[in-house]
Image (cartoon, rainbow, N blue to C red):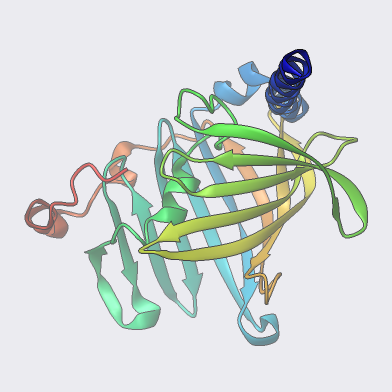
Length: 257
């Protein structure tokens, strides 16, 4: 009986170890499929631009521009009917202007609203250097995406949020992400579909992205028209506006990550 229990324990340990190895192996394959770690890290800045369709029957079309700069700076501009909304993260604080909601002056972003922006600020994404970032990975086996086979990875971020990645077994690239964010005792979920991959400076990027809730997937469709890397950005492009610097100190938002 004891001998049997030891065999079961040994088998379980080997199985867990194999899964851990498989998860890391899949991450490495994904990185290689995108162009390799050297190519990925050769980009110091990145500019993506295109259009976003959303709203009822996707009737609203806006132009967007996303600027990224290492290590974790991001700025997202959305332009519609002559007005531009901005969301930006300067490495420690998030800020925004929301003219479509009647807020034309810059304002600080709360931690809950900052979650998506922090994801966008991760220049290489949660899979690259996952352990150094405090993320953990787990291979969950095979699954289906629109009837096709996919490999499913679970990534638990340092802040406790979870991303399920579905990788195409033929290309090792992401075709779907399911994001779960835990905010004040509730769960915010969304599904992201990725496709139309193209190489930019030797690195593969998705040029088609649709996302929405589980009940309304694809409610927003992003079509990327261009991606450029190593564009000449300045840290001032992401910096907190002067009008908010005093407010930032009062609010205690310094150093939010």
